Image 1 (cartoon, rainbow over the protein chains, first blue to last red):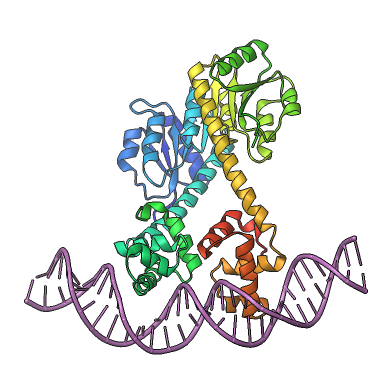
Image 2: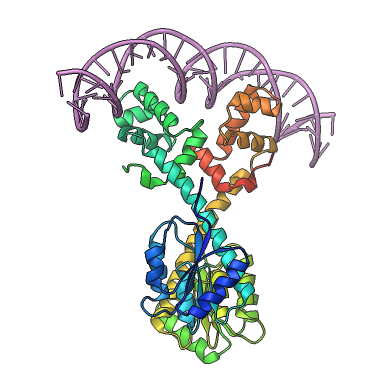
Length: 209
Length: 209
DNA sequence: TCCACCATTGGACCAAAGTCCAATTACGCA
DNA sequence: TGCGTAATTGGACTTTGGTCCAATGGTGGA
């Protein structure tokens, strides 16, 4: 597993700030990718690289908040730490409401910045782990045939095999076969596991009434 | 069910602001309780009344953020909308990180304030409903004997009755009896329901290894 | 057209779970 | 000391679930 290294994506239009922060982060052993503009960042940005963004609020071509919304659209959301030169309260509140990890003001205290980044990286790791987990579950669900999905939907609501058979207009025997295949495909070793898997995959994966 | 009415708790040390906002909210049909200081508010505050708080950030005897922390300690957390006269960005960020619904600056736009309050009230209703739900589950769990809890812990991990019996140093028959009582006491009509109930109650309610 | 996959079913059978009946032992409390 | 509750177990039985074997009909693609 040769994953890309955990990275702090630094976006600031002030070269002096960029350089200073980059040096600080590197001295802390963090891997840094510095960008002078949001466009430059977006062009080189790989969503699959774990890490967080340290973002200057006010930049020439693209607003920090807009960039945040763009990043938030993709899953998993990349955690953002805002830095602002002359930001105002409404901007900071909007940033936080949109999920920013922190919103710091320049000149920024090194310790505050590092703490915020550590929180952001931790959040990224956590959401990535959860995301990978759910992706694996959905991958298994994708192996189910439509009929099996239908049976599963009834199973997880606690219906008996004979009831399911009646609902689907078939016989108990058939339901048993489907059920066995479901357990096998989803790699569930017990009904308890099956139910948790189904709940984790979410109702989106199951056909509706 | 004669529950106390949904209320907006207004806390501001400026009587003029207090009066103006109270009038605005009443004109919108909202039930308002106005307080001139955090102390006064705390003395009359009933956590069981549904509603939200509109809080001035800077007040003489008790800081708005401190009051927020005090309120956050109790369950369910009472949603807060901050109003600030001369607040700064760090204060707003801290408020948001501590769970504030919104952080508005004076002079406040009526529409913004009403929207924020609506969000806060909606959040309060949602968390209260969830809380009541969980309390009901815990109430049922409290009816279980220690032994039944132990059996339940094994059941929800998908163990077979005979395995559970071996783990607990008893026979399958006994496990079946406990299991039947568990289903009855928790009002679960299927294993699926039982598992969801147990997961909802959380691992806190179950004895550990 | 033939193959792979899906959905379906049958029979036989075993394992697991649930449900009646009943009973014993132990513990705390009035 | 008697009573209620908890925990335990036994027997007999039914229902449900799961697992072998095998088979059939449909459908879409190579």
